[in-house]
Image (tube, rainbow, N blue to C red; front, side, top):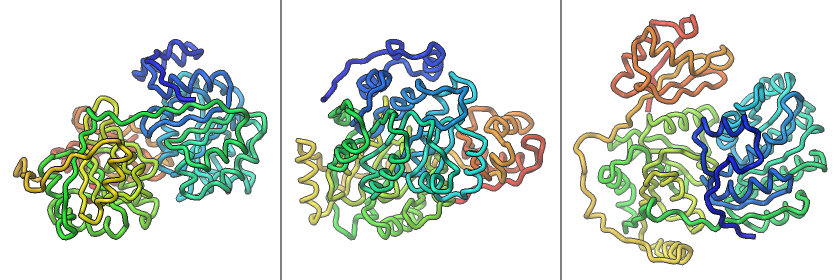
Amino acid sequence: MTNKPTAMPFSELALAPATLANLDRLGYAVMTPIQAASLPIALAGHDLIAQAKTGSGKTAAFSLALLARLDARRFDVQAMVLCPTRELADQVTQEIRRLARAEENVKVLTLCGGTPMAPQTASLGHGAHIVVGTPGRIMDHLTRGSLTLSALNTLVLDEADRMLDMGFYDDIATVASQCPKERQTLLFSATYPEGIAKLSQRFLRSPKEVRLEERHDDSKIRQRFYEVTEDERLHAVGMLLNHYRPVSTIAFCNTKQQCRDLLDVLRAQGFHALALHGELDQRDRDQVLIQFANRSCSVLVATDVAARGLDFTQLEAVINVDVTPDPEVHVHRIGRTGRADQDGWALSLASMNEMGRVGAIEHAQKREVEWHPLAELTVADNKPLLPPMETLQILGGRKEKIRPGDVLGALTGEAGFSGAQIGKINVTEYSTYVAVERGIARDALRKLSAGKVKGKKVKVRLMDE
């Protein structure tokens, strides 16, 4: 069925008072359309297939549903969320933890590849309520016996279409077959390919369906196309950046080689750019994403595969360096900007050879695209386009029991900086990353190196672009 619900407050749901109070503290007053359509069904215990665009609030929808069924006094894995990528799993884990603050001591673990098994196994040995992970690593833990699912009551398949695109059908089937049959299964997806129906028939019990055919708000995402020759294409990206001056931009390329070539061009032009592609190891990938998310990097150059599952709250522009052959991918690309109440630019470069692809996009969007000449692009400001923040890396993380508050306290205490000068703080297993205003970065580096964090001397470095 297709639902078009009107705005509803969370208070109309059958949620615990503590949960509603926490939602109010988090600023969650009115449900998004997918939340309003899916949450009453999920809270009633039905299996569910929910389709809505990326960034529509699906994570909170399934998180609130699985938390409502959780018994925090029982220290067993009662809910599991399967995700296509580690980055999405990390984001989901963070959101569940925020929403779980209404209940004390809810333990959420992320189980993904690219990191050692041993620490994950040790954490599972101490017990957990919810696990979020990628199919391959979940299978590894099931095979080794470090993860047991006998108490599981909720299975969530997040971004199911992407997992199918990445060839995870058999892995999903293996994991689902080891879950109790008497469980609730929630499947969330941005699109509805054939494999979704196959999954549903095999693993869901009489599921309810919610499909929201939402279009991206044209008033929020302003699309423009520019015709280029192949020789102009990479240089034109810099022209767009200097004209529109976005703080944060994702530049999508169709190939890894195009990513590498564009990165070289942008850096030669003085832009702070980083690349995200399949050849990066997990540590480098994590560092790239942290710097971009905390606004220490102006441009993230990425392929579609590398950028799967990523969701950035502040993204002023998307540049399609190459036109994708799949109109649906184009919609997902541009939908990463213009989120919530923010505006965004979706700027596309197209050669004569790509006009057929542009036509397919026009057909899918049911309107003609808006063309502009490259000649109208001017340098809006002679100053270089610099990101507002820089990132300090502290050697020491969760293993050393460092928390964000410890770092913030060190910078705003003896170091003498204001809280407004400090940005995002990311604590990983072995490192801590803190964004600081560009103007104070070297002073902050000096003072942190000379001072202490949590009563101990720490090694600190300023990360290179």
